[in-house]
Amino acid sequence: MQKKIAITALVPPELIYACGCKPFDVNNVIPFSKKYPRNKLCAWTAIWQEMLSKREIKIDSLIVVAGGDCHNALVDGQKVAMSGIPTHFFFYPFDGSSEYLESQFQKVSDFLGGIKAPEKPEEIMELKKIGLQIDKKRAAGKLTSGDTFRILISFSDLASDLDTFRETISLIRETDIKINNRIALIGVPPIYPDFHDVAQSLGLDVIFDELPFEFIRHSGRDIQTIARDYCNYTFARPLDFRIKFLQKELKKRNVDGIIHYTQFSCHHMLEDDILRSNLDYPMLTIQGDLPGNTPEQIKLRLEAFREALERS
Amino acid sequence: MIGLDVGSTTAKKVSIEDGEIKYEITDTHNWKDLITGIDGKDIISTGYFRNTVPHHASVTEITAAIYGVRHYFPDADVIVDIGGQDTKVIDIRKNNFTINDKCSAGTGAFLEFVANYFKIELTEMGSYHIRAKRIPAINNTCGVFALSEMISQLVAGYSKEEVIAGMHYAFARRISFMIPEAESLVLIGGTVKNKGMVSALCDILKKKVFVPDEPQIVNALGALKYFS
Ligand SMILES: Nc1ncnc2c1ncn2[C@@H]1O[C@H](COP(=O)(O)OP(=O)(O)OP(=O)(O)O)[C@@H](O)[C@H]1O
Ligand code: SF4
Ligand SMILES: [Mg+2]
Image 1 (cartoon, chains in turn green, purple):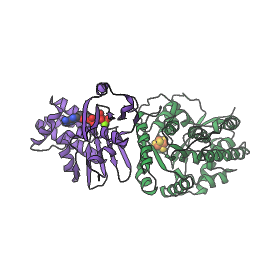
Image 2 (cartoon, chains in turn purple, cyan; image 1 turned 120 degrees about the horizontal axis):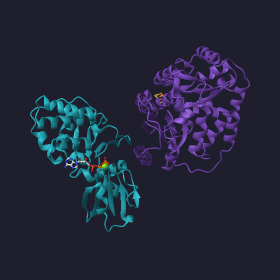
Image 3 (cartoon, protein in one colour; image 1 turned 180 degrees about the horizontal axis):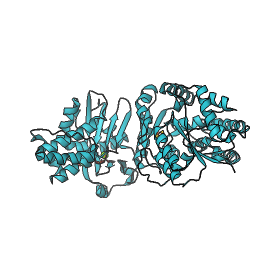
């Protein structure tokens, strides 16, 4: 039986599959959750913490991305560990050292019992190539914003099964979309499952999703090459590194405006003014909290942002 | 053609007849009374209920505010709309806006609560403010805590007038955090009819502050202007 390994943020699925396990990104279920967690800061971590501690999601062990990502996850991860689930804490290097990252990956591999399926990373590499094409097609108006987002975000765990996932992405249907406003969605992904569809219906076509793009752009064949690539995971690096990367991607995609999605009680909110002063595009900042469909107050902001883009 | 702004708290109707602005204001739940005999295709709507009321076209309050304010102050840089349930700050120069709808301390409903507590009319809040001899410091920027602090100030011996003035200052300080650098700003929305609040805001911001004669109808006027 393949072990099911929960992950709280980007842990190379290449590595988990290579260890003969199947990754499960706990964030996937959260937008659909109806939970009102106790003692909550960020709803993302609070909800997975509660679901894992109460065994509402069946997993064998947990890998928490603690360093270079999120301190709320570090604390909530420890709560899960204390509830009795075997848990490993994983740290990205701030300075991008691939040697350090390699040692971290080695520890993940040891935690998972070592490499058993060394051919898996290669298979994932092929799938990520398709992911990059999907991303390009959306920017060209061939795929809807929401369909593309749902596929790209699933690249964090590839639906816990490579064959199923390959099947799913082969089913995506091309259409012709009239793009009204080319929008880059930066920050953490929205906690509202209908967000991309709502934005598109209001004339804001998300053609770039910052975090999901990280899920498809890194790969590698073995621990060493995976480390060399993932050390450029922008969210774990200093802000100027991330900003330079964004400037390049946004220019390439010819975007008209940016939506900066932040989450209540998340440190990423502190980045808002820096991003605003370094990214020369009209920018709308929104802050989500509990999961559910996009609330009216946020729809108002989206609609007003569309009007603002059309005024400029 | 009429501009109809159905907000969270009140509904406003504006029409322009022979170059003169005519308006009517009522509570939101009575909005239908404003449009008896008026066809949907003659209505440009705005406000929270813009898409639920009959309309020929709708526009958000943000854009409506810009068009409405321009009628009175063509060179305005920054608009602050303090309504019943939220405060919206629009930076026209940067084509940027922020909405505070999370913190009750920055909304008209907060001052309504204060008025209710003292069993006085909202319209009297301004005259109480002027009579205050001292201004108690209300430090909390959170609405709920500010209300409990208000009660401790009464216990400490401050008069009703002084505590009301203190609450206007607490309110104004909360709003001032949202306001960008600018030489002047235009205030609109029902809450800015409260002269005590406006005077506290002027004192804190030390900026030129302009208020249209009837600040509550500016968005309804703006909706109308936007489509004509
Ligand atoms: N004369 C007055 N003095 C003081 N406050 C007043 C006066 N008239 C109205 N208000 C306040 O104005 C508020 C309503 O303002 P407005 O009509 O701009 O709100 P709204 O557009 O319905 O709300 P929102 O924009 O938040 O949806 C009420 O909360 C009321 O307290
Ligand atoms: S939204 Fe912010 S606080 Fe929440 S899990 Fe993500 S990084 Fe952590
Ligand atoms: Mg209003």
